[in-house]
Length: 458
Image (cartoon, rainbow, N blue to C red; front, side, top):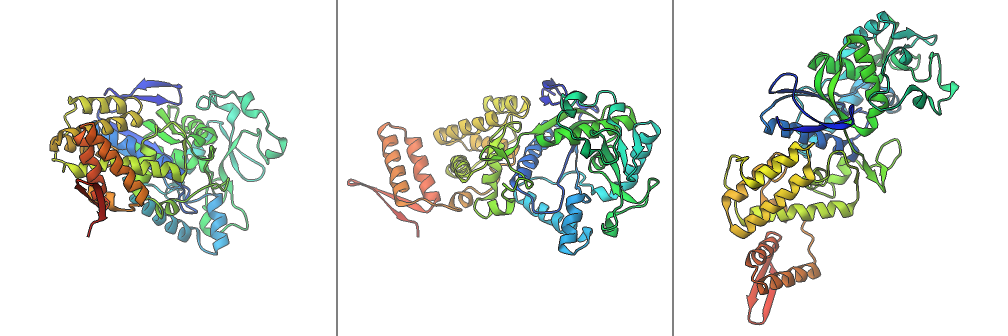
């Protein structure tokens, strides 16, 4: 493979080669299912959906695991507040998650394990860590991981133990030997529901959050696999702790490449439920079509922050319309991508450079201009096929262009003037493109000696 991926662990782009030739094993941290998914979840899951699609387009078989956290403090609190069982809440939220993800064109993973189905594997890891002296039973009944006993803790976040201790308060110890120690197994609390507790050699309780991902990843992909992904907010402490407990128990590296997507921001601050500055996917899809939302996320590099706003989504829709207008003007032929084609080669070079979607999307616009200029069905077919590797441009062009059309009289007149200028400059392809774009939105132009007028299509 010619693919290079930025590895958070080494802080550098690296040539990627899977452990098993032709087969990529990849794990991405999924959703904690206690509420509707927000746009930050959309950002992360679309980013890694593109990664999986490109690996498959590159000829790899991909075993993709994206877990579902269905037992955690927030889930228990919400279930108690709703006076429902944990299972009832999580079943409902998982269905809502897939409703949103399916709408956004996020393909289903190979495996979507629920944490509650892997409690025995979690207990095996805790037992192995205790045997190796890396875990201890605290006075409050919890079992904790002893961070200072694991050499190399902090290698993912790039922080020393002293740096990580900065700002810690003694009050956070709560039975821990060290403030940085984290819980592997949480002792049951009297007020917690029965379906949030399991029997174990360490007493009745439930798993800590970090141990869940280690158990599911290793059970389904092996103790060492190719790629581990997630949001940048998971780098520390979640992924750091995954490394410590997995490698502490198994004695081998957990993942060879660590990938982290950038935040989706509101007013340049991370969107999150804890901060209360979030929009659910459902809310956004009530105002914008799903492909526009996907395009808004795909056209930014996965490691870059994105600022969410209606203005930016409107801009994304306008840009996507330009691509669909080319496909509406020239119905695409069904083609197999010829990667030696200059456009396809530039697209591939962009994607092989750490999944460089901004540059890849730029190639799509070059192709659209080529389609408008040449009227080639084969070029239109290549545009559609390359877009498909990103999960884009697979809809019916007229349906997309008609949906949500909001041109007012002033906007129509501006487009008529732009068309007249294109004709004056003898850029007849652009003039025809503008006519077709207006027609796709139900606007018919009528040229006469006195100028151009318009009317709504009947």
